Length: 162
Image (cartoon, rainbow, N blue to C red; front, side):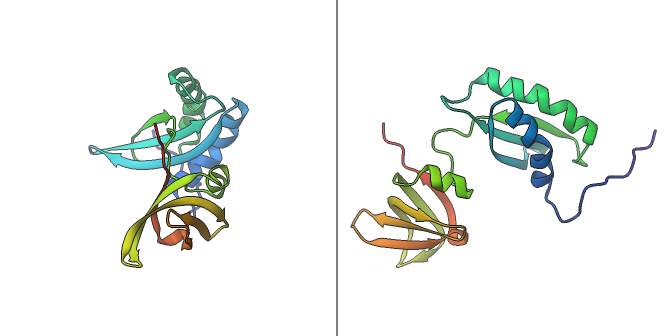
């Protein structure tokens, strides 16, 4: 039996296509879709939806979302190679990637790792003061305010103290 041709738009990445399909389903179940990854792990493709809700996510939440999303993905068939579906919690130290992540962490201590050094350093820690679509500002531990381009940051993550 032959497969019907794919109808996905060529200008969208696999993660964007899957996010568009799954986000409404996940929202209807009462969860926030935080991020989507499609990566090769140990020679196998893995599609992971990271979900959250007030109070956190447990294994039952992940199973519930997986059971709701999987049949829709199977029907729509947006991914060419064989892959495994995974649903996970993003964790308390999840990286700040989207504008809403920065907004949620405003006033919190974050660490920044840059692709290239600035002021002869690649790592900074400070209090997140502001953020827009392209930049964010930290009040560094020495009291100085520093503006970073989001595109220059390899990783921005909350500092978790126990």
